[in-house]
Length: 129
Image 1 (cartoon, rainbow, N blue to C red):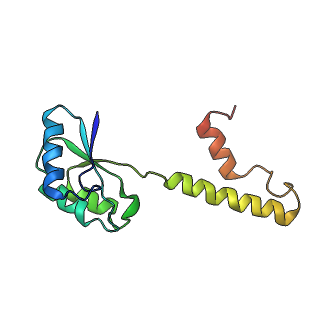
Image 2 (image 1 turned 30 degrees about the vertical axis):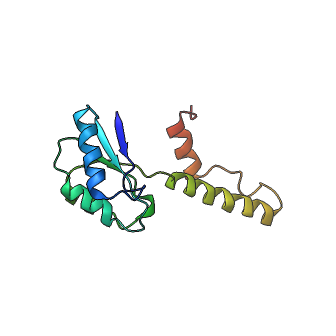
């Protein structure tokens, strides 16, 4: 079970976030999700540096892209990273491009052909036979 402390989101501060996280860990949580509405990773990094529990942390760095994989590894106690909606953003961008091509070309004749990307999708989705 992943227990989510909303203390930073609710502007209750680092001490309250740590207090809640310790309570969740003591109650048996498998991981602690800590999240912030700040635009930089400062609160998350401060939390991770002060977290000395054995329960691993989960972060969602959507709002603070400065929290890189290297920085996450360096902190040493983050066990999971959730890239919340980045795949959806990429899919929407790709769909807009395809629909723009369809409109520009007057049909699907240039976009409806197999490509290395569509073969990769078919292979990973199990549709390729």
